Every structure is written in C-alpha cells, then in structure tokens.
Length: 127
Image (cartoon, rainbow, N blue to C red; front, side, top):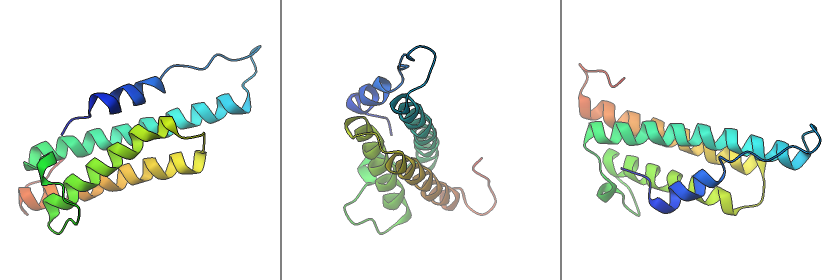
C-alpha cells in the first residue's frame, strides 16, 4: 500500500519550516510546529502499517466499506488514516484534531499488526 501523489504533496507541504519573527515563536508558529510533530507521528505509524500489510499480503483492494475480516479491517484502517492525514493540511490549525489524527494512525498500525500476526501464525513474530 503506498501513499497517493496527492497525499504525499499535501503532507510534504507541511514539512516546510515557518520563519520565526525576530527570534520569537508566535502562537501560530507553535501550532504549526505541533502539527508537524503530530503528522510525523502519524506518517510513521502509517508507514509501519503499510509495511506490515505488505508482509501479510494485504493490499488496498482488501479495503471494504464494512470490513468484517482482519485483512479488510487492516486495509480499511490504513486507507482511512492515510486519507485523514492527507487532509489535515487543508484544515485550520487544531492541535486536538491533529493529535486525534495521529492517534488514529497509530490505532490503524495496531489493527494491521494484529492482522499480520494472525497471518504469520502463532510461531512467528512480526517485528
């Protein structure tokens, strides 16, 4: 599972540093820095989840509107979390929403880890 070009460009636009004004960080700059931190955590979680999906043989085609099996739950969680992370750039600065988005990405990674563990079997570890 890979990020779409739109997701990548939106996420990359947040990686540019906001210039400080006279050496003092404004509250908006602090919020932007916090957003960058949350997005970095979220991207890291989604990257881990995608790697585990590849390991477990779970593809984007496994995502379902109503996921019922571990593979569809994992694929759907990754897809939805990646979409949410990509849309954060369009939203007003909101540290609580940004943190929720990062936590949801981490939860998606946990769902994928469970599915990958089930795929690997009881005798093998996934990382």
